[in-house]
Image (cartoon, rainbow, N blue to C red; front, side):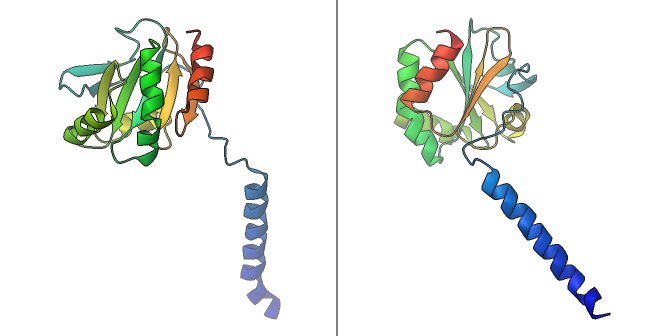
Length: 171
């Protein structure tokens, strides 16, 4: 009967070994991109100026477009602002999705760090970002002219990563 008391400890030890094995084999730089190769999810978001905006975001924007999920108090979003501005200067179309924050905060952020976006949409409840497969901010999705997601980048957009994605977009 004493072995019955040890069962929870054995199960706990096996679980610890299982999780440790998974953690040691997992590359922390790999972020799942389940929607790459699939159409952009449909939905609607208001534009920052209050007019209705609609996904797919390629409507009204010719050619490939980058979707950038950001919010004003996100330190990595501030870090990537110069790279996004450089992309805009190269003629790259970027649509910003302001994630779960008041419009005034978004406007202040854009006034301070620059506005690289062809349009800014407001995702008040974060639902559309979840539909896109965003796991945090900043995240950038490359969408081709037909509305297919062809790449996803999680984290700060660096000039090197921007160049890589711009080449992938054929720009």
